[in-house]
Length: 132
Image (tube, rainbow, N blue to C red; front, side, top):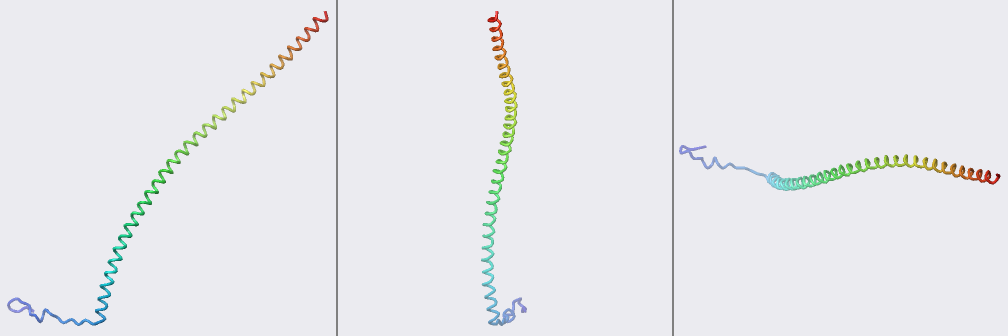
């Protein structure tokens, strides 16, 4: 309480606190536990920051691989288109080859018939001339 001069009585300001040994040990262990928890929190924050860096790094690698994969897919698609065009060109060449082979067989047949006809004509002419 305050006296008439506005000052506190010294007996009022000091209260007797009786603390047992068990309470002191609990306070001490709580203080140590608080320090340990603060240290663990600091370590967890550091670990979280490290994990965030690793996650960011992995995400960058994934994006890079996906972009490479997309680029490779585009190259593969272009090559498949080229392959299809080459196969179509091959079919055209095969058709031309077949038509040229047919023309060649006709020409061979024609030459054979002309040569046989020429030989027969020569033979017949020679026979007729000799017979007279």
